[in-house]
Length: 369
Image 1 (cartoon, helix red, strand yellow):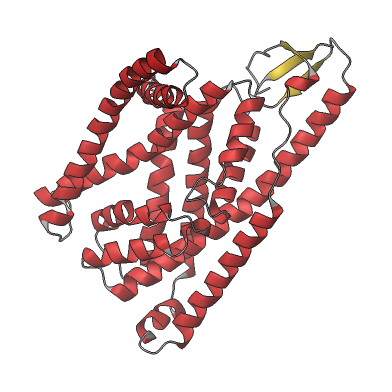
Image 2: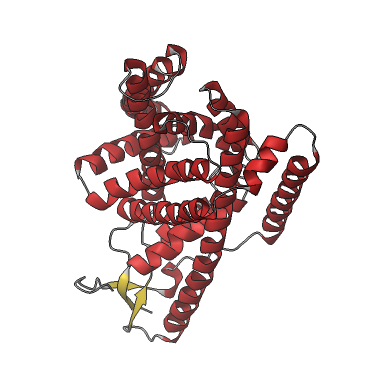
C-alpha cells in the first residue's frame, strides 16, 4: 500500500481472483506485421514517388530537438491517462500498479486493430481484480469513454466559436468553425438528454420484458454511465480533471512540436481544431489508427489552409511518436505487470487460510478456505 493509505482487509477465497489476461499471440503478430508493412510502404512512397521532393526535403532537415520534445509530450499524455484511469476505476490502487495497467492499455491500443479499444480486455481484467462486479465495470467503462471524449468535444466547441468570433488567430470559413462548434455543443446536450431517455426507456423495457432483458440492461448501463460522468465531474477530483485535460492537451501539442520540427507552423488554434476533427479517422479499425487517422488529419488540416507537404510531414512524425512511445512503454509496463502478478500469485498459492496478502486493486486481503 502507498504510505498513508490504510490497509483494507477482506476475506476472500483463491477462486475469487480473476486470472491474468492472456495475449492473443496470432492477433498481435498480425497487427505488428500490418504495422511493419504500412511503415515500409509509407517510406517507399515518400522516397520513390516523383513529386514529393518538398516532403523529402522536410524530413531531411527535421529538427531532432523538437521531435524529442514530442516524445516527452507523449509520455506526459500517457501519464495523464493513468491518472484519469485510476480516478475513474480505482482510486485506492497503488500508483505503481495503476501506471503499469494504464501504460499497458495504451501500448495495446497502439498496435491492436480495434479502433482504440485494444486495451479493453486488460482494463476489464484489472477492474475484476479490483473487486468490481460486471455491472459496475460496464457503467464505469461507459463513463470513462464519455469522460475521455469530453475534452475533445469541448475543445471543438471552444476553439470553433473562438475562430468564428476572431478571438483566436487562424483563417477558416464559418462552415469549418461555427458549424463544428454547434455540432459539438449539440453532442453534449444530446448525450445528457440521451442518458435520461435511456433510464426511462430501460425501466419501461424491464417492466415489459423483465430486468434480465439485454436491451433493458444495455439502456440502464448507458443511463448509469452518463449519471456516473456527472457524479464524477461534480466531485471535482483534481487528478481526474488534470488527467482528462492532460491526456488530450499533451497529445495535441505533439503535433505542434512536429510542425516546429519541420519548420512550418500554422496557428495553434488551427492545429487544435484540425487535430480534434481529423482524429475521427482513428475510429477506423486499423493498427494504431494508421492510415485512417493520418489521412483524416492531413485532409482536415489542408481544409484549414495548411500546406499539404507541411501537414503530411508533421502528421507522419506525430503518428510515428504516437506508435513508438506507447508501444515501448506499454511493453515494459506489461512485463512489470506480469512480474507483479507472478509474485502475487505465488503469495496467494502459498498463503494458508486466514493469512493476508497484498492483491492488486484490493490492498491487504485475508484468504479463507
